[in-house]
Structures are given as C-alpha cells and as structure tokens.
Image (cartoon, rainbow, N blue to C red; front, side, top):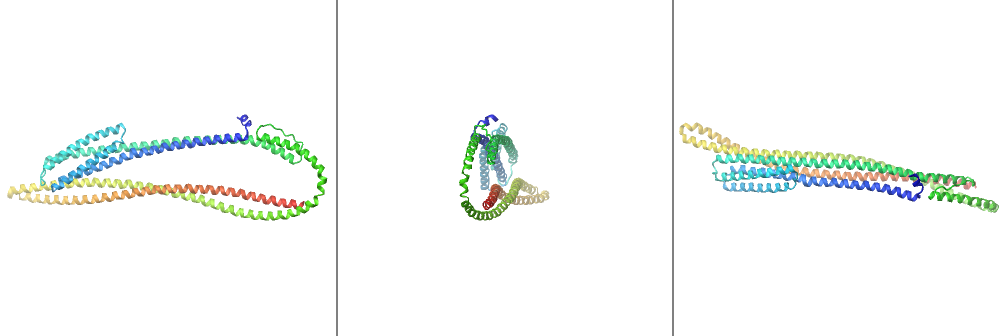
Length: 495
C-alpha cells in the first residue's frame, strides 16, 4: 500500500482518496433512502390495510346497533306509519352494514381473519332470517296487543345480534393485532437500517482517516526535506547535496530546489562582482528608504485600526453564535413540549371514544327498558280486563293492575327521556371527538414546524461558529500583517 502511494502523483492520491470517501458516503445515503422507503411502505400498508379495516368494522357495528334500535322500537310503534318508518330504518342499517362489511373484507388476507369473516357471513344470514321472521310476526300482531310468538322470535334475533357483535369485535381485535405486527416490523427494520448505517459510517470514517494519514505522510515528509534544503540555502549554505528520490510533485520540487541551489551559486559569484556598482547607488536608495519608512508607518497605523475593528467584529459574531446555540436549546424544549401535548390529545381522543361507546350501550339498555315497560303496560291492561270480568272478586286485583300499568307508563316515559338525553350526549361526544382529532392533527403540525425551526436554528448556529472561526483567522492575519508592517518600518529606518 505504501509503495503504491509513493509511486502515485499527489493529484491521483487526493482524487482517489476523495473518490473512495464519496463512494462510501453515497452507499450510506443510498442505503438510508432504501430503509426510509421501506418504512414509508410499511406505514402506508398500516393505514390502507389495517386502520381502514378497523374503521369499517366499527361503522358496521354502529349500523348493527341502529338496526337493533329500530327493531326494538317497532314493537312500541303506535301506528302503521311508524312501523313502516322503523322497518325502513332497519333495512337501511342492514344495507349500510353489508357495504361496510364488504369494504372491510377486502383488507382481511390472513387465514384466521378469513375464517372469522366466513362465520360472520353465516351468522349474518341467520340474523337476517330471524329478523325477517320477527317483522312478519310483529306486523300481524295488533298495535295494542302482544304476541308471545313475537317475543320468542325476538329472543332469537337478540342472540344472533349478540353473536354478530362478538364476531365484529373479534375481527377488530384481529386487525388491531395485525396493525401491531406492522408497527413492530417497522421498528425492527429501523433498528436494522440504523445498525448498518452506523457500521458503514464508522467504516467510512476509519477508511477516510487511513487515507488521510497515508496521503498526508506521502506529502509532508518530502515537503519537510524540501523546506530543510530551502532553509540551508536561505542561511547561505550553497554546498547542500539535494537528492531527488520520488517521481511525484514533491520530487519535481526537490529537483527544482537542486537546480535553484546550483543557479544561486553562480549568481552569488556574479553578485560579488557587481557589489562595487551597487555602492554608487546607495545614497539614492537611502532617500527612497526614508520615503518608504513614512508610508510604512502610515500603513502600520491603518492596520492597527483594522485589527481593533476585527476584534470587535469577532466579539459580535461570537455573541451571535452563543445566542443561536441558546435558541437551539429553547426550540428543542418547545419541540418536546409539543410532542407531549400531542400524546395528551391522543389520550383524550381514546377517552372520548370510550365515553361514546358507553353512551350507545346505555341507549340500547334504555330501549330494552322501554320495551319491557310497554309489555308490562299491555299485561296490566289485560289483567284489568280480566279483573273486570271477575266482578266483585277481582276488584282488588284490578286496583293492583291499574297501579302496575301506571308504573309501566311512567317507566316508559322515563326511559324515552333517558334515551333522548343519551342520544344528545352521544351527539355531543362525537362532536367533541372530532374537535379533539382536529386538535391532535394541529399538534402534530406544530411538532413538525418546531422541528423544522430547530433544524434551521442549528444551521444558523453552525454557520455562526464557522463565521466566528473565519473572522478569528482574519483577525490573526491582520495582526500578523500589522507586526510585519512595523518590522518593515523598523528595517527601513535602520536602512
């Protein structure tokens, strides 16, 4: 390796070293882009396949609840027009549930979930048949009377509805587990890409340092020899033996120094011969030196003022760099606070969803209570009729039946009021959920904006530090120029 570098030109060494480092950097960048593309694909799959399926299942479950409400209210309808409207509500809910179920089915590809879907379709057909039988039986039932056959069919419909609800819950849980697996795959891929990029980066740094050491060693050593030879020549030793051992630019430099040394030896001899001619012009040179001394002193004064200004500018730039660093720290804190706020909003969204589900379940229970009150009222009415037929012996029973009927009517009224309040609560909770979702999206946008600002502040901080370093170097150069100028002025005065 060392022999190969010694035989190469300096330009070839530098080009090869930088090209290799660039190739390593390109490999790291390409692998990083590939990893990001894979993670982006996983995120798209998580949304399109998993989350949409869960959303469709939940919407289908809501329509199942609406169908159950319409079925329960059908028994309590007081007119045929109300029955027809409730039957239409039931049919619309079933159609919507079928559409949402088919949309969700397109996102279920695993064997277990396909089996659950098959069970769901079979149970849905049973539920539809039982519901149709329920409506047929209930339609033939008089508006003011109850039919035990309708109650028996309703029990079967309720069992089928519960089974449908359980299957929907199982499908949603399966989708949530699939989404968790997708998230875990993305996390694992991130860890793999991160580890490989770290290895590539470390290898690139090591190779870059090795190449830098080899290139520097191959350049500095010959240049040191050249500087030593030049210093000997500058000291007046023109007898130095300068050897040329390489074929690169430093070898050319050593050859040029050797030729210069030989030429200087000849020139010194010629100069010695011309010293007498120089003496005659010494008086003119002295006068010129006096003028030069005055101009040099003026230049030294200007350089001192320039150096003072540069020191002030250096202090200002350093202060700007410190302020940029402090701004970077504050922006990082703001980013962390925004992230925590987003997490809190997500928690509120989940809580609002749980409240909405509980309200819907309470509404269903209230509908059941309403139906029970209606049936109790019918039974009390029948008992009163039977008591009236019994005459004097059934009078006490008629009083009790009247009280039971009154309580049933009050229970029905209370159940309807509770149902109305629960429906209003569900509507408000859903509105609150939408507002909280919007707040969550806004928080995520704030987090992204804060992160962009943090990146810009870090870039400004880095630029300020580089500017401070550059101005410091300029200040040092001006100070050196001032020193050299003052030395020149002193030399001119001595001359």
